[in-house]
Amino acid sequence: VQNNNLIYTVSTEQEIQDLQNSYLPPISISTGMTNLSGTFFNFQPYMAVKWQITDRVGLRISIGYNKGVIQAGQWKLNDRFQISDSPKSALSALSFRTMIYFGL
Image (cartoon, rainbow, N blue to C red; front, top):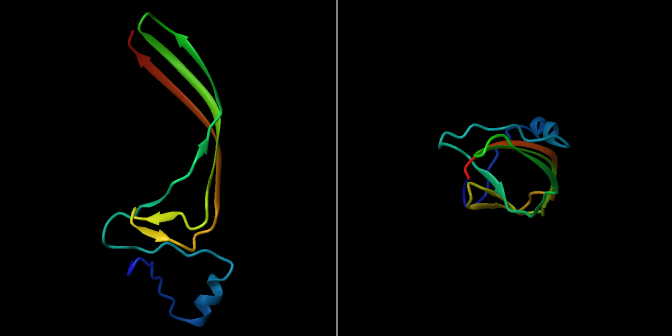
């Protein structure tokens, strides 16, 4: 990363042709962990069922659906560097959660 730009070295014309309509393979960075993030609104309808097992212990199971869209150019690398040419990305998935809770 230099001057807020991610530099990916391509050495031959054939490598450029191979990357067209493809993806960039991951590169190793020796400076530590890399973080890719984006801020977006997440719509999450769900249905949950609770069972009271004892006076102070219960079980909650929920199933839902997550739907979100990150607009173009909203991805960030390491929480600092804007990836301005990132495409619009839609995220959606089924979610399933279980939780044991203790208390009054």
